Length: 190
Image (cartoon, rainbow, N blue to C red; front, top):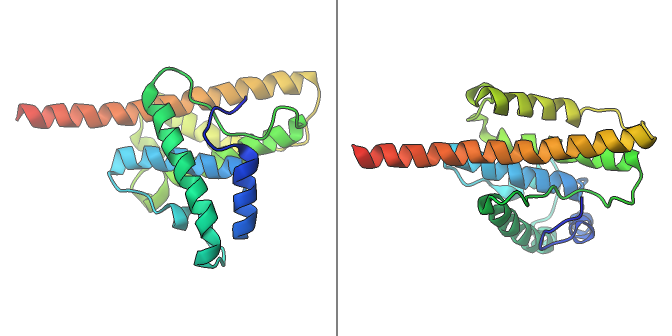
């Protein structure tokens, strides 16, 4: 899936490498998307530096170029999710990469999303609707997938799973966004 993001995959990979982190751009984008959804549910702004650098020994000055890149990516991702036009896209490794690398990229993305979504232990998967809970559980399975499959069927399966995750994230976001609006409307009535 080609990226419509203001920052490209390779730019993020480069900024991550300069910061000395062992993440992929897909994982970072997943963290951002999950953190946006977490904030919808909890109202707490995520500490992106802590989420991205979790457990890493990183100097603060080495994070500056990455922080600028993350800010652009965060803004662009928020705009995509709020636009509600179905054009939200996962930031994954290039489609020309082999199926194994693309599957690993999707697994990284899902792992990052879950990290951002469940950050702070204020959210449990069981708190979501049945559909959203099932999607989150499926993402757990995807994040643990073996990446050694190749072939034409694998390409088709991967495309379907990417689309499932993309639409699933939109569903989770819209559910949480809808909860906020219902709460605001309820408060206005009282």
